[in-house]
Length: 401
Ligand SMILES: Cc1ncc(COP(=O)(O)O)c(C=O)c1O
Image 1: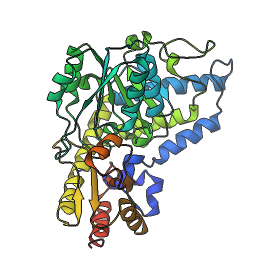
Image 2: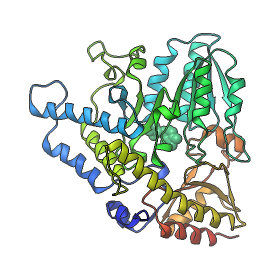
Image 3: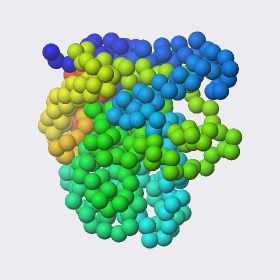
């Protein structure tokens, strides 16, 4: 049976606005179950942690369930799931904690494929520690991040390799396992950005060789909550700045202040929703997640093939990226129009796309398009259908010079 996209779409109230939502890479819509879970948590009553009354106990359970949900999504240990407002904040937090042990002569490897949130925190932490930053380069013709270059990059005293599991503009999925294997052989830790990847297929922390794996629920039908999954033993050895009065246990040690308990209920509902995308999937929630996101990825890739064929057939459209393994994310410019003008003209037709560098700061700089407004990004997620693709292609055809 084919992926039942009509059934999936019916779960998302916001899709009823009639727009073609191709902006999912910047944040998806949420199913009714997620909005209901958040409202339900508030309606049931929420108390801060540590109180002697039921609302506080409910919040304690929400935190535990949220950790379990993120852990199931990435194949991690709930006891090693650090929760936070978003990936950027968490990455700065982890960079600060890890860099406390770095010094002059140590090296950190970042990539020009990555979203700036997996670059700048490391570059700045390295600068403070006196450590050296080494850069993995992108093959600009294909958008690939060749793993072989890491042999030379890891010849020194590397402490950390930060790399993305998928580019948020080109969609490129580097061979992360090959990169992290090299990093580990050189004695470095690995920090993998799974924010874009987790929205487009199954993610497995161990298979990626990630010591730390970051993800953000708003990219996959959840609320604005981020998480970093790691081995609890690894986290135990790190000591971030924290209040004297807050828990020193792992993973709480890394979490600052009062969390958004109700949103945590939304994270659980989003993970349950992803696990049910393929109603035939059975077994544990982790098993259902793997099966369902695999089915969703196949659906996205089928549509993506049509989208790319349509874009390639238009002489006035220039696409970026040709990596054989990539998410259903198209990045392109239109002759004679700025990316912003294209996005505005498409928006006038009810087609929602993103424009700009999309924080792929180094990559768009290397491609020479950052200062000219970047490019247009049209990203498919599991709730997009053929009509969305057709509407985008029709809109672009009208922009022929
Ligand atoms: C690949 C990638 N990494 C990191 C981020 C930053 O995530 P957050 O908004 O959770 O800080 C994004 C957000 O666009 C992203 O797409």
